[in-house]
Length: 81
Image 1 (tube, rainbow, N blue to C red):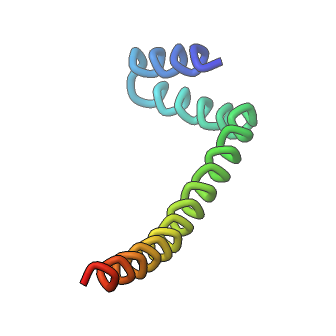
Image 2: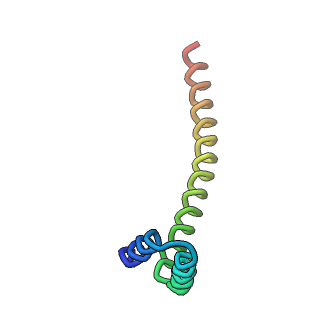
Image 3: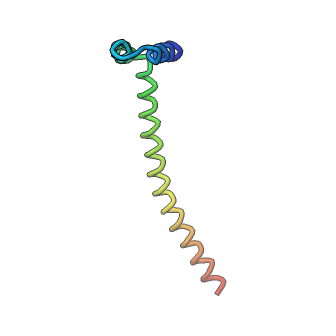
């Protein structure tokens, strides 16, 4: 289906003035009616949400690991000295 849209865009380049605007408005109507990419957009939004949650979770995990290693380092230091 993407080749279809590329073909329309190539035709718009060859047109001039008012005819190009008519063709562009027709293209926009077709894009508005075409729901084929809707699922892809929804999956991308979910992926972005999951990536954001992972980033926030890793920040909390990093803080916990930093605290744990600091405590272990303090214990090791206490045994050495």
